[in-house]
Image 1 (cartoon, rainbow, N blue to C red):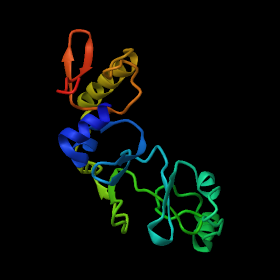
Image 2: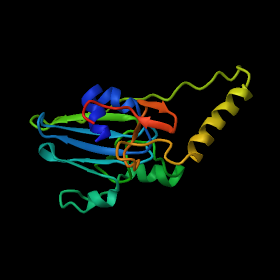
Image 3: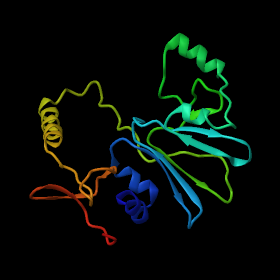
Image 4: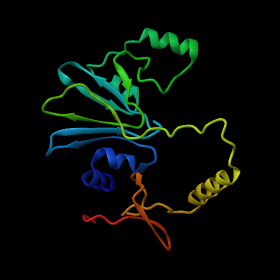
Length: 190
């Protein structure tokens, strides 16, 4: 419900940019007849895509789930298989070792209109920050502060909470501080 409220308030692009954590999802909006698909910034949670004739679309977190569908053939992508044998696995490429099955890109979202299904055009909601200039001197103080903040956040139970308190949905960065830690900001729907 937090994710739905965020998307309703800010739209997919801005809502997803505020989300932290590892997730992949597909949301069906029956009123606007659209499907919203997204994957976390680093692609920790997998999301595989198969497109078939007539706009057919299958999504799964594992390739073997897609292969259970009668329309999906377990055909090898010879180029990717050769690359796998030569270079090893690559979880960052869109292509998989199975022909017709691709990975949804990390840090992207896409919207598919159900009445006019077309190409799936992922759009980035997040870009990796630029790497620091190699000529720039290392700032040990800043690194220690970041480490201390990260350690405190991990060591504090329920440091991030959702309205239900279970932490079961992606945490959005629109939280406000309080005396007991961090609490999700109130929305008009809560």
